[in-house]
Image (cartoon, rainbow, N blue to C red; front, side, top):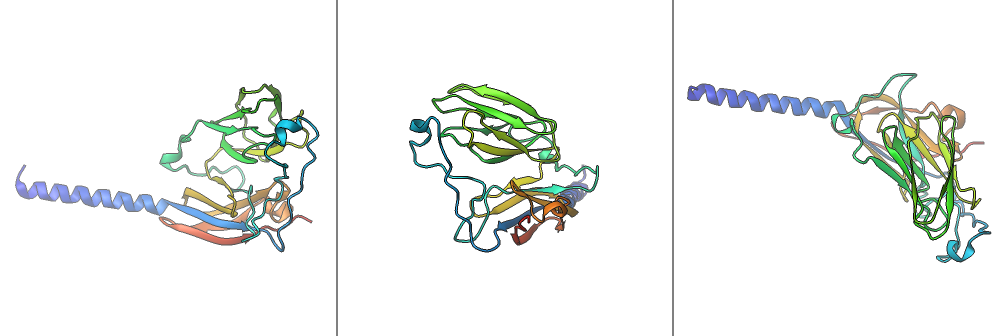
Length: 251
């Protein structure tokens, strides 16, 4: 190849790579925010542990995970935040998210409480109901499409393939009646569970106008209307910071 043409070809290749990178960044973005409780943070309820107390209470009392609110910033833990398309529309998938990074999502029962309390998984992931404790548990899954009741002996686990649902799926233990938790099964990867400060982040989300749903085990923020989600616009190639989002309590 003539030297001048070689330089031109290299330059053109670099220009195309740069343009492709720019286009890639324009199609996707990150969403983040914080879910906060309105008013004074509620106190966590102490649960009545009336069975297997030697094991269940060996690390102290067990408190409800229903409202876990950080008193320093009113951040609400265990809130599921997810993108919700209109009607039957499908959310575009970022190339890196076509397959889940992890094939399994684990829920354990080490000390008579489900850990984590709320999880999200994609339809092609497996829910592993694990029992790392020395006592027998079971897991009762109650949903519209998912209905299971399985004994999980000490040190064992059950692997469950769940179907996507439009609502949260509750799980509980039929042996220890105070135990409960929730999972969401999605057909897309654009969801997150809030941390101990109420923060969430969803990466590589499709840029544009979408609805963002905010769900807590007491219901959607804003009640029945909140189930539709709040309209947001995701900036291409950057971070869309929604700031503090006050959870609208159901009346």
